[in-house]
Image (cartoon, rainbow, N blue to C red; front, side):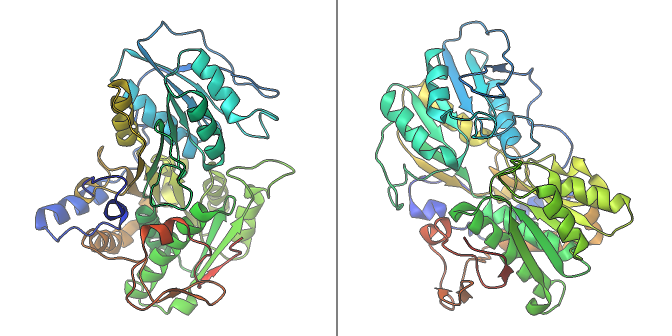
Length: 433
């Protein structure tokens, strides 16, 4: 989608570009080329890392880098190399900073209650700022109040929160703060494609989702995947929607915390043992892929769809249907360049895919098809073209799980209705809270 004003509701709508043969050709070619190439978005050396304040499990510190004219700090909720959410952020910002040799960088990972008890994100940010950071990124929704606290305490520092909505003037929780911004990729579109891939790949009609915690974000992403699965199940598989089982089990956090969350390894195994032959995931970590690989090695017909990191199919290429992923580089590049020039102003950016080159460097979200798609890659490509030409799956009639109306027949959801989705939609098995 061609970027428009990031705070305009129109900029947040599902992209509806007109059908253009050259664009359609590019879409098909980019999809066929794939994105599961096994390479990160950066080839630069590992960046400087600091342990930051910690009561437990501190990250190891590297020697301090030479002083830079401008410095970026990042607070990561999980391990920087988790093959998921955190690695996608880490790789994305590395790829940007590799082209900005005069910009310094430090990050602190595993800033969460399990790895660093009693340590707040704002404390870590204070430490990064004391070491020279003038641009600070928080990469988890859980940090929304930390980000606001940091922005208020350090008005000279640009603070970016992924995802959050405090900078959204049309949102429910707007808190004006000139140096605080929110960035997010509109992964819902890629989740439509992921759901379609799952529906095209299942032989049993049973798709299991290993979900993290339950909030507005995770509800809308699971719903987006289901809507894509249901559409492709009916249109391309020519089967009845009631014959599709789409179930989510929430573990309670973005990754496993022993004794606190459900064990995602067991959840994955339970799905497989229950006859679910396609696993999807919303976690930061790769348990669904790893357990699918193990089960496949034992002779079971099981496949998976990865999430977050574009190299996710590398975990088990032969059984991977694809990966819905974020490319954070364009969003980070724009924000850092504005901040360095002294021109950053609070903004809410929720940017969708660039269908002219879905898996290229300009698209903030993408979908890399996996080898396990086989002949199903053709109908998946046709579905992507439908999306590019205006197919809107967040359109009525749709009901919530409890039977109440979400969208009337023909009614398209607003950006706010999608962002603040209060329930899963009817057709999904699993709790909404």
